Length: 637
Image (cartoon, rainbow, N blue to C red; front, side, top):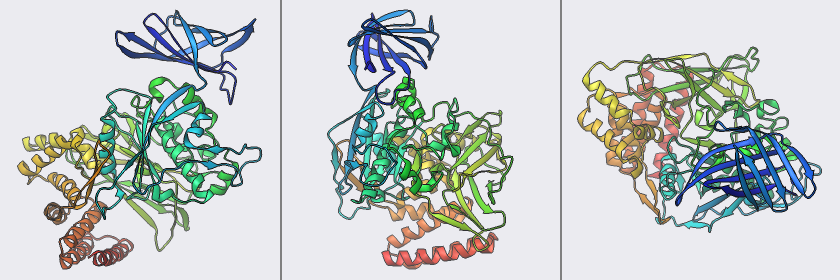
């Protein structure tokens, strides 16, 4: 066998060369990354890949030759490698490198794993315990072993255990707390790409998710993931098997692997596998969406491995497309063609995007997504919010460029409870803040935007909405200009996405919102600053320190009531968000010991929505929600 990693240099140029022509699952490729050494520093200069090299034996040597695709303009595209025993000589871009065999693995990554007390990390699963595909070898698979089979070495650092610190603390994590934990951890990494990834094993997420990938538009791309123990725990073989898949799946995102049904959103677009990607037997697919056969069909056929295209990416993707802290998730996927309506649609479902008549310059853009049946009852899933990635939103900007809204954090649901749309429940609704995401602010200039959404139904159907026109008005006064300036900062966008945060990394954003409230309290857009500050005050906030200790800031009901009370009285935000804010205000009142006022707040919500003239089905659901909220608050009190 000659496959593996070879390393060496020519003068100040260093080459890491990957030969992949024999051994387990060879992809028939040569690839390499080039670095420039200058004194005590080393910088990345470029990558190349040879897709189908010619391989021939010459005596005791192996010679490989082919035409490379480079990330830079090479003096010659020809790549030649001669291997003798454990030594090699490579000619790349007109330079001759003396190389030595370094590893059977193509790439090596340091995995740092921390777990909160009570969240037990996964160890391994014996793949022969439960029935699987005929002929698949039974073996003991840990997460490092699963990646080793793909040719990737995961070197596991000494695991850390995080004490909770506060007895009785709510161990459910929200996105703001996870963002803060991420910024604290990644601040130790340095502002550079590196083969290093962090995995947090937490107790649970407030949304019930199994895992998330930290994905940002700053220097810390794809450097960490989290899995949630309460959603996957168990000692049964089925639970252990699910835990293995969740861990490998979330770390796969850190290597820049997309979900199986989303690869067409990358640039250049990758071809989707069978059944629009849902037929992929991959770690990156959702088991419940597998076609054919759903979860039983997936496990009956899944060989516990990545697909061939995924294997090529892991082993031979260009350095900045794979290394953590380098290019963004789905690099190059920002600009796409607008979603098009299918030429035939027999799904029985209709998707709409709705927005208010106009937004002020700098105002957070929130749209309402509505999924309805077109007639006959239909069964599907309820993951309508774009943060779960069964729904994508594209935005055509005034200049004609179309971009995909990409959330700050990617939630992996892995479970899709069915919902039934019929005469008694004809539609479901979700409110989505799409003004800011991984790429920053999406509505940074006045003008007319077109927003479309695409919902992937339980059967794989892709339901596309008509275009919704979103108008962003020009600022009129000097006050409008100043308010927009305070609203459109990058940190403020993150605070709107996270609904507030205590993170020191967002201190400047919080200062801007405070200034907005203090100096421009009468401006219509100040309601959003009050909402963010009030929601953050209403909850406790977990602070994971650099020393891996957890501190918990208790809720501040007084501050929350002051800010959220003003938001509810104005009632100018969208209905779904107003519903959520009102319930949080009621909880703050109850926490302060005034259950009667909490109930009055909930009764006021019914009156507010009745006055808005909402349809009877929605009003019935709101009244039921109000009664359930009152019962929950009474039980907590």
